[in-house]
Image (cartoon, rainbow, N blue to C red; front, side, top):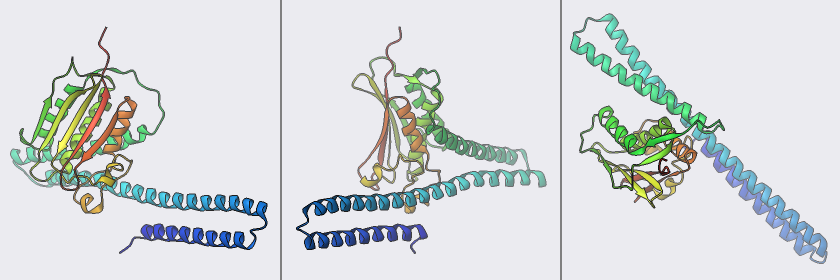
Length: 302
């Protein structure tokens, strides 16, 4: 069943096409009937082009606004779920602890689950705050020398623990670099970017997770962190959209994967703030993907 916004998109698109067709027909008819009035024909042609351009731009603007509102609503629904689910879980376990007598082993298990839920809740809040600050022009903080290899290794180890993965399911490799892999930046922001790449790879991987995190040097003056997975893959049209704010993959995949749609947007924002870039590569749907974060290498310390 077509949603209300989808019907609106179709209506405005067809409406715009009809207006353009009518305007073209009327203008051509007018020129044919008044071909001797050269000056007026030229002015009419210019005016016609302006009207057509205005209608086309108006239609494009309306369609984009409808899609943006649809993505915003999807983001609100996703964040609401991401906030409500861990809160409900923590409340349930607290009520159980309050009303029942449990042995120490069961209590420790409940405490562990509540801590995991609180971490999930905190992660969602941090994502929203980071995405909000990414669009603001704020005063830059002082940047320090950061070991990018250390951040990638730490995030890999943390992901193994948090997602209960075996060491062979997620491996980290630091390829030979000319000197230590140092960049200038804010450690927390860089850690958030690398973590979001790994978190995204785990979410969109099948049950048998196989993820490779590699650090390598490009052209002697740039460092790249690559995260390669064996997940659902990305179709070519999606490769240009996945880094947009609020954007999520098509519903068939998004239904199985929970998230706010902000992770990759934060990665791209952090990369730009640090003078680098982020991009994705994939052979197609069902064939895995590789996400790359490229940052300029810091000059040698004095």
